[in-house]
Amino acid sequence: MKKAMQTLPKITLKQLAVFVSIYQTGSTSRASEALHLSQSAVSSALSELEARLQMPLFERVGRRLNQHPNAHPIYIQAQAILEQSLTLEHYHKYQVGQIHIGASTTIGNYALPPLLAKLYQALPDARVDMYIANTQEVVAEVEQLNIDIALVEGMPRPTDIKAIEQRAWRTDTLMIFAKRDSRWLAGLADYQETERLYHITLTQLAKLPLLVREAGSGTRQIIDEQLLKHLPEAEVIMAIQQSEAIKHMVSADIGLGCLSQHVIEAELAAGKLVQVKVAGIDLSRTWWLVWHKARHQSPIWQTFIDMIQDD
Image 1 (tube, helix red, strand yellow):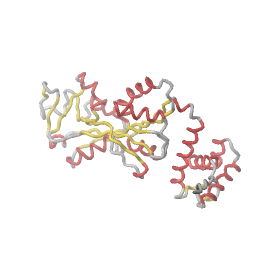
Image 2 (image 1 turned 90 degrees about the horizontal axis):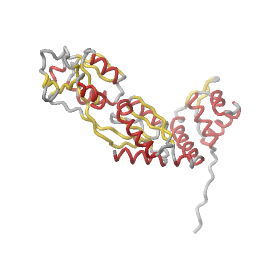
Image 3 (image 1 turned 30 degrees about the vertical axis):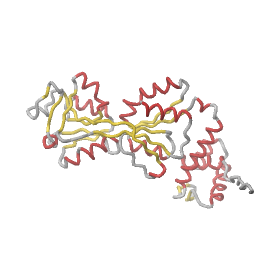
Image 4 (image 1 turned 180 degrees about the horizontal axis):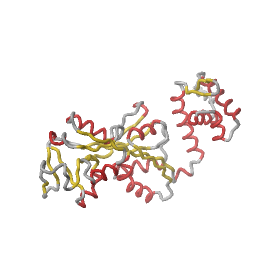
């Protein structure tokens, strides 16, 4: 039996690198500066790639380049190929490893630091890059292949679900809370000393000012799906991007807040903030691991995955 003939690819890594740089910078001149190539060499490499693919990647409008609809899927594949090529080229360095980790805000600020400490303990020479933003923004970075692995609070909603792997990781509970002697609860509910919390009803909560995270955050997703749907007339007075800002505003008695238990545990322990338990409401949620299926899974990637799943 004859062996199948292997076909050598005609597309080069240089052509892919030029295309990725143009896609990211928006012009051949900026790409030539980034890659230290002449502008004519950049333009030539792009034309050669388009010829090999037999499709346009950019539309020329005067001296401007506008992305063609073909460009995005090719960009995703090109990023993966270049990443794998660099990993192969510097394989010995990847034995100790470099990893790009994304995390939604609550996880990045409160749950991830001890996990990174464990990673550095296992791999002292590890090189870690961090990206912390809300869930929607982090998942978008995963889709662009800018992040190796992401840890997010809300249910991931990628635009291309077939390209993204997501796995349940941990459970967490959101907590409604207030200042210890909040004026909003005076005469409305009695503080339970034994439980160290207030009990109120949904009807009562609907009349109180509520400070919440912004749309796009994992915390806000759970609030919308598991709390606010029961409170169509709730007084949500402010959507805020930072959990720390919500804590400080609740401490100033501007309203009640709703955040992960991890965010306010120190203030609860000190008695500065107190839980407000609402009858019939469950604010538990799942934290997720998210990665792109085309992303190279280096040794440090696998070490990190194994570590956080055993945690």
